[in-house]
Image 1 (cartoon, helix red, strand yellow):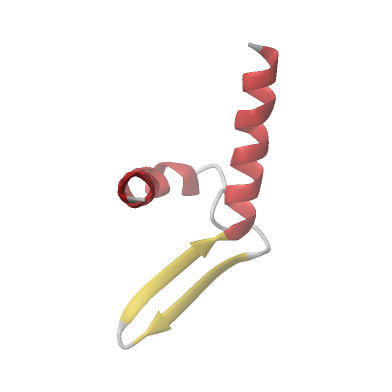
Image 2: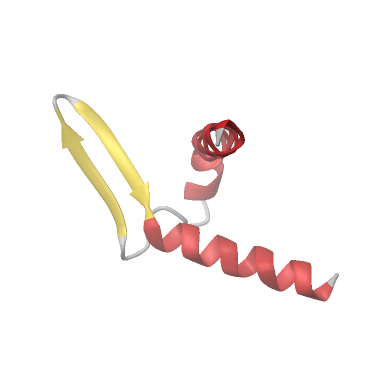
Length: 64
């Protein structure tokens, strides 16, 4: 179970590092991506972007 926590933590770190790069081509601004402000902090839940990127990754993995 600790492995899953580590994997989720690393995935969230990678997403937060690459989110500015992904927003330039339009990822993160798709319909279904949620942005909210709570207690003065901005939150971001990229639902549609995650689905789209996982579909692309699975397509690439099947081609290789």
